[in-house]
Amino acid sequence: MSERLIVHVPLDQGRDYDIVIGRGLLDEAGARIAALGGRAAAIVTDDTVAALYSERVRDALEAAGLRSGIVSVTPGEASKSYATFAQVCDGLLGHRIERGDLVVALGGGVVGDLAGFAAASLRRGVRFVQAPTSLLAQVDSSVGGKTGINSPLGKNLIGAFHQPRLVLADTGTLDTLSAREMRAGYAEVAKYGLINDSGFFDWCETNWSGIFSGGPERDEAVAICCRSKAGVVVRDEREDGERALLNLGHTFGHALERLTGYDSARLVHGEGVAIGMALAFRFSARLGLCPGQDAGRVANHLALAGLPTRLAQVPGGCGDASALLDAMAQDKKVREGRLTFILARGIGRSFIAPGIDAADVRAFLDDELRDV
Ligand SMILES: NC(=O)c1ccc[n+]([C@@H]2O[C@H](COP(=O)([O-])OP(=O)(O)OC[C@H]3O[C@@H](n4cnc5c(N)ncnc54)[C@H](O)[C@@H]3O)[C@@H](O)[C@H]2O)c1
Image (cartoon, rainbow, N blue to C red):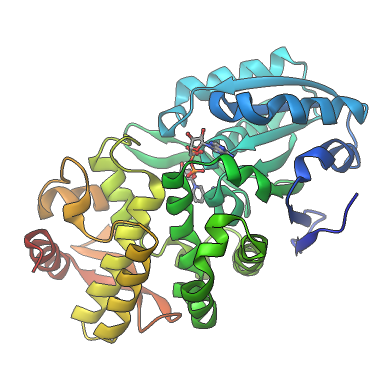
């Protein structure tokens, strides 16, 4: 096996694991997954990714002596549902996945969340491997053990913490990702700079196009993001504190996803996050917490990478301030008219801000909707 970038996630109780990063890694999936033990490894994927990569992975697994099978779901956020969850669990049982066997999540964040939750539930928990194939999944969702599905009442409301045993991020798979999904994943890349690493945001401003074109910057960025996320996860695995910073832009973003009916034709997760991060910085500036110049720099960079940064850019609209506030209330705890947000004192200086007055948020959203 070739030399690869490896980020170790040093969780306790024998739950530590490696994130292996590099181009062409899927061909090594058999040997690397077989090294974990077990007799079978079933692949969970979606129809788009299945057509591109599932046979290659199945062949690699079988060549390494593992029995394998494929469960494929319809692509898109709508598959993070009770019905598809049942389809995946029954599919895995149909492939005779036992306690000592493995589930391989091959795909974007939807497949990772869904397959991870199925692995957490199947026979009260089987091990699983993340093989993320979208940029968003490689830099974010495949690391950290959050798994789950959506309820009609809100996003990610049903789920479990279940850490993977291994993450294999084949950065070559991003060559087939659509430009739009690539940009959406890039929002999460920039997020790491905005949270606590202004040097990385500077680096992104200079090097972002290399990530898109598949230069060495791509592997480097994935490794930097995974290292950052791994650090946060090890310090605060179950989101009692610091891990919430990873939700920068997500309170607004999740509300927009909800108001657009999780319809990826209108808005995908990373686009919601991009608008959400731009809003979080502008809101921080309005509250006098953050220099307006930083808020401008964030929006400019996201826009340069082709991402939306304003509510007016949501196709089909997103309702008024009341609709947005209602949708946010589903996502976050609201206590006596107060919300918790991730705000910023500047680029790389995000913090958890409890007790934000809903009236301030409403006034801000009213102005944003008028685009003033
Ligand atoms: N668990 C976590 O910690 C966490 C963190 C962030 C986001 N998420 C979740 O991740 C999901 C979003 O993930 P996503 O953006 O990867 O969406 P996704 O899984 O829907 O993938 C996006 C699209 O790209 C396609 N695709 C994936 N890889 C491809 C490839 N290599 N070539 C061609 N097409 C490819 C998929 O078929 C899909 O149509 C959301 O449900 C979000 O809630 C979870």
